[in-house]
Length: 329
Image 1 (cartoon, rainbow, N blue to C red):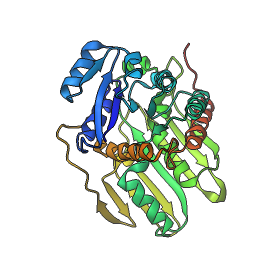
Image 2 (cartoon, rainbow, N blue to C red):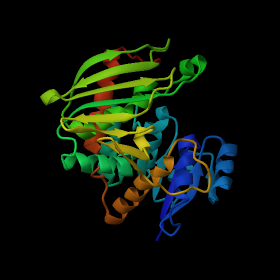
Image 3 (cartoon, helix red, strand yellow):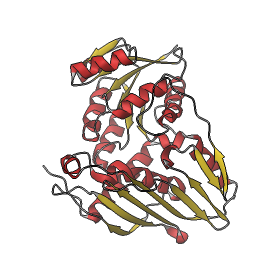
Image 4 (cartoon, one colour):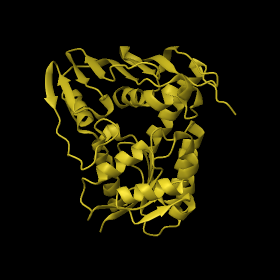
């Protein structure tokens, strides 16, 4: 029996989520509803992806009995409220990263999911991609020796007016979250020392850019950059005592990986429609993981457990505070 999916939000990532799901068997995954506050956008999205139900109310989605699990692809500032509404109505939830805007909100969602015996996962889809699987396997095989340094970046330019209008958290929460999670993936669950921060803030108090150094035990360092004004390499390299592994742009969904100088190209499924973000057809791997968890009656995924999302939310929060980030009320 197919897993019935509901999509909340008609954003670019929601579009790519639907495009990616189109490569999977409809006997296993079926989008049964989409919800947006804009009725026209909701209907257009439904027509584009042959979705039977289009809602202009999140509450209607919450009460749709054909929806087994909801994918939350709204703007970041709405992740908490929408996810909470779905959980309160008994819906399993896959919420796009970053989970919430602060650690307290993440903890509240986790407690709610636990109390209601529901599946809840932050959609850190990077962890389920073939490149990250290869990265983990090669490190476990001691291919590059002991990993001691990570260097990564995510920068994409946008107009100053758009930067000033943003209310989704700034470059750290929107872009560097991938670097933070990669750091914890390799060096965690230890909480690192925030050794250095530098960046510029908007008039509203969010970060336009950030340069961060995280210091872990045994000489392990993660250095990363995020930027709303310039293009950065958007690559990540892990340096070990015997070599290095490089994930090419975009490193969170890489289809090219270099292991000690030898390149490997990763094949991914072809989509019927173009995606709006690079290589985002790889969302299929987390989609399949969610179905597997639901079929097994597992509420907390072992790769992106609730503890990881809480720990990382606290770390991101501390980094932002160290940089001087504030939030307009």
